[in-house]
Length: 415
Ligand SMILES: *Cc1c(COP(=O)(O)O)cnc(C)c1O
Image (cartoon, rainbow, N blue to C red; front, side, top):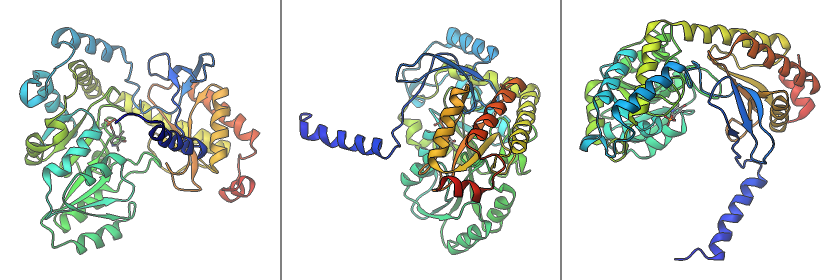
């Protein structure tokens, strides 16, 4: 078939609809390495501008850390550039197995298997360990990659209201006839920065004989006293049956993910998970970088401690200035604006002030809950945060929203 004008028009019309709906995604180009200060170009060809990055998942500031970069160089020298094979044929090096063991130790689990990404880990894990006699019971706000994994799995599926333990319990009772019940949640939810109540979930899973799955992508490396994740924060290390996480956020930010947990479940993934069997794993250069990240994090808790201090400083500054924040203590700090256009206008004005922070609105967040999501990093210094606070105050004043209640903002700007 040829790409006829008629077919071409189908796609042109769809793209036009996306543009008209105001949700066409345009990517800005960063001309520097990922860090607190970045050089950004708008695709319209405007000149380069140095801005403070308040929207990366670079929670620990390790994306361009000199020791990580050096370890990656060394890995490139000693293990080469590519594997040119999936793992079970001839694509496994000693360092891949070493990284799996190190992650197991770091997360306090029994075993770990690497995947090209956490998206792939989530796409493969459910189908590898569950069958149509089983049920997956997921929180209604889990990450898109988990939703895809659920779609690819033949087990039955049900949901519970976000973080609602009574509702979860009723679903566990309802499905008591299934062979295996698996409860599925994110550790930290990326839009609100709230954490799953893992202590209560473990209790429920023990009471109703269910497995617990946690995607800790927005937690591994910094949540909990020594940064092991949400399970450490809630005192349930060793009690989570499956943890998936990414190396593409706090843990160096390059790419890669894993499934970590019960020995037999990890072994099932090695035998059956399709993104593991049919796609190349993490490149040696990245494996070497992540190994160094784990070295750095195991030495002391300096970086996650600094992140916690920065986050407290940032929350206090914005609150004192009169902004409305989502409650919480994670480095995901949403500044609530409610009105979609207001979130876009403020984001643009902040950019003009040298602050890069993105406004989110429906359908990424619920209708009427538009916001600017800021993300704090251990790579931020106090001077970064002070400059960003000044810009937020200046712009907040311009729009007359400082000190207003939610109702007052909605009265002023509508929903
Ligand atoms: C970012 C993210 C992923 C995807 O991670 P990749 O390794 O980039 O594929 C999966 N789950 C959650 C909860 C995430 O936040």
